[in-house]
Structures are given as structure tokens and as C-alpha cells.
Image (tube, rainbow, N blue to C red; front, side, top):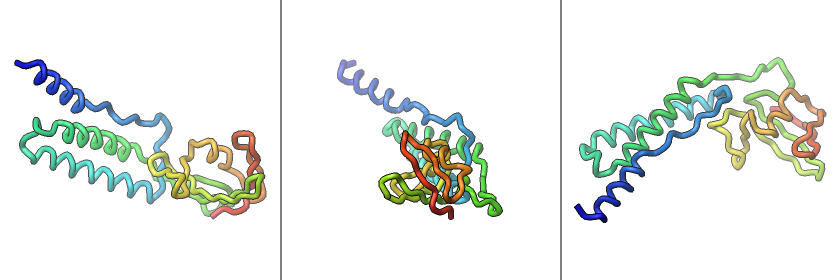
Length: 159
């Protein structure tokens, strides 16, 4: 057996042995949209796993099977632990699932929805409920001040 063949086989085996995606130790709170996203990702993972199995030649693309298996484990665990959490409409405070608009000391206004970890995307206006920003704002009302990283924020709207 040639050394080149052995090294190639070893690197393929290493690539196929992907580490699991880390699962947060925090409760898996989700909004209704977040639950739908998890279900969609789980469905995609199941389809990718079935496609990798159906190809018949798993050894030809072991990384595809490893990726599909890893994603199936991750999204299966996240879906199983998901806790649908809806904001209480009777409360006029910043809550999980609500959008909060705040003003920074320099006059900039920003708005973010407070959502679960898997659905958080600050570039699209959502932050995880465990983020420092969300933790500082949760429970606040319009007009309240919050400190985040040494800067003061004022809550100006809650939707």
C-alpha cells in the first residue's frame, strides 16, 4: 500500500468524523417562527441523511453522510428540547418574543426582537434572549433605562 493512499484515506476518515455541533446549556426557548425554523431544518437534515444513504456508495462521500448525521442529531435534539414561549399580551414590558426599540446615548435608535438562540440574527433584527443586550432589556418598560457594556439605553417602544 502506498503512503499517499494511506494519508488520503486517513484525511477522508478524519473529515467524516465531524464533531457534534455544540448544544447550549440554556433552556431552548423558541418563538412560533423559531419552532417552524427548527422543524424546517430538521426536515432538511432528514432529507440530506436519506439522500446520503440512498446514494448507495457511502464510502465515496463519507463527509456528506457525516454532515447529514451530525445535523440530524443537532436539529433532532434542538426540536425535542424546544419550549414554545409566547409573550404575555397583558404586560407592557420587554419580553421574550417581543420587539424592543431603544435609543442610545448618541441618539441612534435600534430595534431588535428578543428570540431563541437558534433564531437570533442581529443583522436581521433579532438577538438571543441570553445576549447581554436582551438580558439588560428584559422586564423594562417604555422610558426605562438599561446599561449595556457601560452605555445607557432608553426603551422607547415595545411591539
